Image (tube, rainbow, N blue to C red; front, top):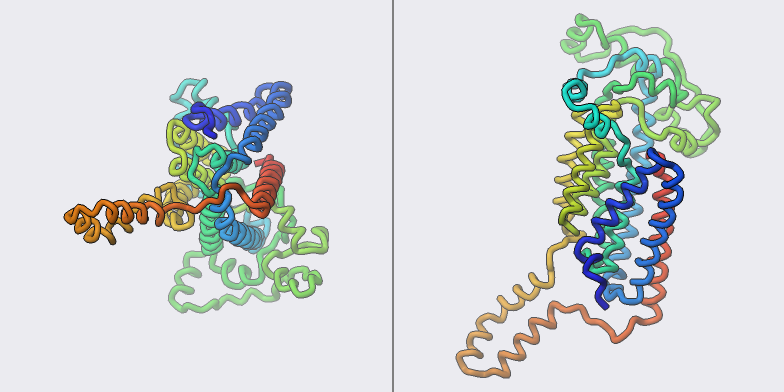
Length: 427
């Protein structure tokens, strides 16, 4: 069964634009947003479910299930490491440092302020508008992955999802390694005191190795010459250390206070992001990976639309001082390069065509000889062999096990959609 051309040719792009537009209504008319959003999601869910019985690639999805699960586990592990790193780099210097250290000079911020004076007011308001956030990009990718049901995107959808999560996990891991390497002040100096309850004073390491040499030019010159932490700082201020059992060692990195609860995991849930500059931007990484996936898998005018949204998100991150310009620039090219490097997991290229060409190359001499001998039966058998070598064998009808897998996959995917929408709805 073939779906109507409107869905296959441009329906996904229309659905993407409709989703972003309807969700933006919450800033214009909450009444219409409350009415239209359930209608839109119900419509998209119904047409997706009705396509399940006609989907022909469940065997491909089954083969992609294990890489998908492995990528999800890897991504969750990297997110945990990132959360630990975010709390650590925020806590190590104490709240006083965050509130007293001025932001870095950022020409990108200056440029946007200058454009506010030059551009028409309507254009500036569009640039300031909260059109799209983190949860929108996640939902746009989920829509892209589900479009395999309509043959709009190359199957398997789980393979596309595995590549997306694996690439994001690598990006998150590299990001955490980057921002823990050198601690940069936030573009929002008040952030740490508003969101964290870490001690006011620096960690023991910072007291010994950073504070005495932070601002005195002679002290910096001397430590470069001697390469030894020579300053005598007297008695260290000691941090509170809770009893977390086998995880107590994390207290040295997370620097909890008595009022923050009894579990290390609770600290990470409360953080919701760091309060020093985390180079590069995690939000922009998600946006770029979504745009790259959309461009490769679907293309068309909707890809241009997604990239315009990415550019809008970048300038808003800088304008609202969630990040410096360098964070967004680095996130864009890192996201592009990482996506290009993970094509071995899923690719929009026709591997069957490559397989046929490879097989044809192997039998080329035999095929030429059969043609010279006018042996049409041999030619026919060789061409059939080429075709069969690249085809995916299909049974006449899906087995019960395959139907069970299909049901579990659809149900799990819908649960993931709901969880992603709920957990990231605040951006």
